[in-house]
Image (cartoon, rainbow, N blue to C red):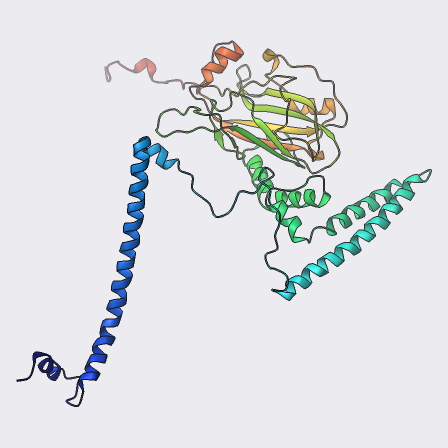
Length: 425
């Protein structure tokens, strides 16, 4: 009798009677090979999962023996990032992406950059000698000196700007502001990568120009930091921890965030010391007498000395006209709180402004009186606020006055005399 295996193979139309047992075995192994590989992969995956589960169980048991693990602790576990932190506090040195000899074209490019830098530095030395001799003349030509100094600045930048390590440090927050090339790279990044564009877009969209000033041309990066707020529910937000964060121009802040003066950060691109005046104003303060709006002075600090090496945040900003927190009135629309950093021509003697004299502050008359020009550079920033539950405390504790309430004027009811009376009588 033929076996069941032989009977099955005979019934298959794809096999001829001449097939031997060896051919049958080879075909069977070929059909079973993918299934065996799939089974092996699944088994390896299960073993890895069981091993990781056992490790987590042992770790959780050892941790539970010491102290219970709460969901907050599990969520607060630090996530390791691939890219290490790089900054002035955590500096790193630039390393070649390729070792010597791996890519000859890369080595040759670095060699050409170095030779070009050395040639430009020779031109810089020669030009410095020409400028020194011109300054020693009895009557130096100032126009010619300005042209020569501008050419010297360009040569100094070009002699260093092509080195990969210079660009890498500027891109990773390790710029040396005492070097002209690093200042140039940071300024170009601020002007061309969107930060200045976003600021000017919000300034013009919110009508700060021309409501506050007819025009402004920033020459330094002014950044404002206020405490961060955290809200997990729909209830009013409160400051849980003093953690400052950058304020994007034009965003809405809560009056609870702006009770204390902000931290002012600046990136200045000139190496010499220059004087600036800080102004913080509200152009949307209600004017009840004239049924319109007026400007309110929140903060004034003249004679701020800034340079590319000045510390950030800027210290000692509350020694002149003290900071009064924003207090948008109930019933009014949003207020545009504007921060100005205006360049001075010389040291100014400005009297302090009392709390009851802050309203009706004329920004343009103030600038004209003290020789301040917004087109000469400086910085600007703005944000918006509306009334919230924290505003009454500002009126009570700081301004020592009753909180006003505003609203739309009620419309006259032309049919008020006839309401409630019978019709058609």
